[in-house]
Image 1 (tube, rainbow, N blue to C red):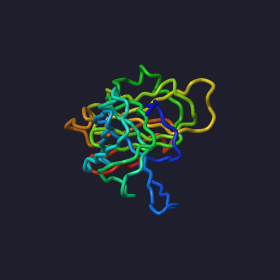
Image 2: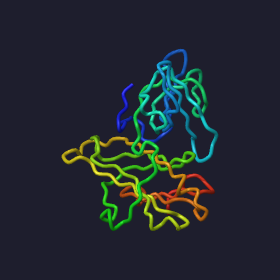
Image 3: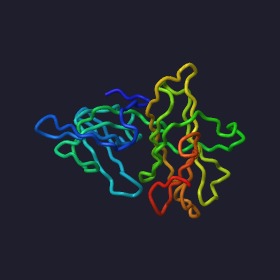
Length: 225
């Protein structure tokens, strides 16, 4: 199965299921960001947390994935075998898979002065949430092209704040501005999240929802008022 740097999907939100009941058995399709734990000729094993510190879910497929991507964060479209419920460990049929932006690496250190005030293209839709040690991003960007740049930065001047600031910055390739596309990112924020003074993180970007989402330690994702 081929990995790509982005995956254009019909669903705008992550973990959005649809059921096909045209046959005798219903089939559900889901989209999730997961860690590729292993991949052999016999198949692949993936795991993820649905939200925050929920239990780890393990998915197994008979389709092998790129062995070079083991340990990285990928986005998958799949249907569970024997159930139409989401968030259940077990066997799945993989429909497609793609390497997320960031692939599970930590956000890059930066300061505003070095990045032209976090200059970025606009984001039409943003879903930012924590999945264990990872910040997951599901976005609609006003381009269906490969991006020239996509980065996630931690503003190091805010590391001692109660809400350190993470900035999402992207640039589409020149000449591509047609239909919108879905893009996914996943970044390891454990080094920020586990700081003793931190009450949550603030994810900042240009566009949707006034360009800000707060993820609290004490609750699930909450948009900033």
